[in-house]
Length: 216
Image (cartoon, rainbow, N blue to C red; front, side):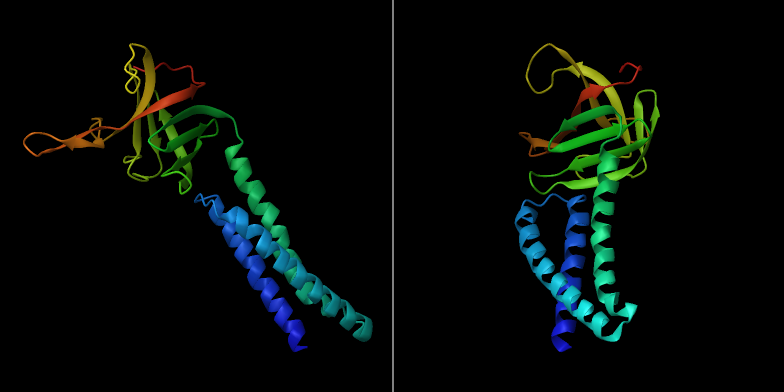
C-alpha cells in the first residue's frame, strides 16, 4: 500500500510539473524544456501504470469503482495538457492584420482585437497576451509598458527612411508615444562629449500590414 501511494505521489508531482512547464513555455522561452519533457514523461508513465495496475488489482478484489480514483485524478491532469496547448495555439493562429519587430521584440496584432508580443533576449523572451484598440495610426494596448522595448501603452505608426540599413527606401514603423503623443526616447545610444546620456526612440519595423489605413 505504501508503494502504491508512493507511485501516485510521484506521478501527481510529475504531471503537475509538466503542466506548469507547458504553461510557462507560452509565457517565457526556455531552450532547456525540450530536454525536460522526455525525462519527466518517462518517470510519469512508469508511475502512472504502476498506479493503474494497483487500482485494477484492488478493483478485482473489492469490486469497488472507487478503486480507480487515483488513476482518474492522474488522467484528469493528463487531459489538461492538450487543453492548455490548444488554448494558447489558438491565441496565436488567428488572422493577423499587423506584424512588427526589432530589438528582439515580435509584435502580432489580430483581427479580433487581441495581440501577442514576444520580447526579450534570444531563448528567454517573455510572451505578453492582451487586447488592443486601433485608432487610425495609433495602437492602444491594455497594458502600460510591457518591458524596456514596449515602454508605453500607445504605439504610433509612422513612415520613415530605412533607419537601420542606411538606404533611401521608405518603411513603416511603430514607435512608443506618451500621453502627449510625443515619441518616447528610451533607446540608449551612448554618451556625448559633455558626458550626457543620449537616447533615441525605439522604431519597430512593420513587416506585415493588412489594414486599409496608411501610415503618416
